[in-house]
Amino acid sequence: MSSPHARPITLTAAERHRLTAVAHSHTAAYQQIIRARIVCDAARRDSNVAIARRHDLTIDTVRRWRGRFADEGLAGLTDRPRPGRPPRFTPVQVAEVKALACQLPAETRTPLSEGTCPDLAAQAVGRGIVSAISASTIRRILARDTIKPWQHQSWILHATSACG
Image (cartoon, rainbow, N blue to C red; front, side, top):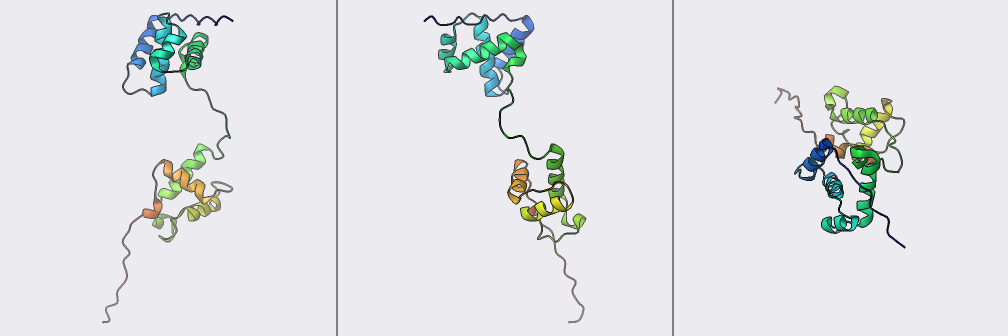
């Protein structure tokens, strides 16, 4: 059984310039750099086996990105949506939960002790931001941005009497 021929890649000057810049970038994502290098090597008519060996990749990986570029051009080198459960909360709801967590206790008229995740979950449901949310989900939402309302520090001033 003969192996399939590698898909031929022909680059325009603009594509070659863009891919070369990404392939030698120090700030681009590693996956993008590898994909750009695969396509640049493929444009030089290198075989999939040679490209895989040069970049320490599998032949299937080289074949995938070479084929996607041949079919879709530069757009084919971007990540596709991955399978999985869709997000339960909209970005607006997540932003409102974060805003709720960032409010000072004086603004919400809640005691300082109510800055915990279960309290924030109850407040989010009470204000109609979400219909239901767990404390662990609140914790994950806030952890993405390192928001820690339970570490809020303030001065508590006590009224002292002049009777002494």
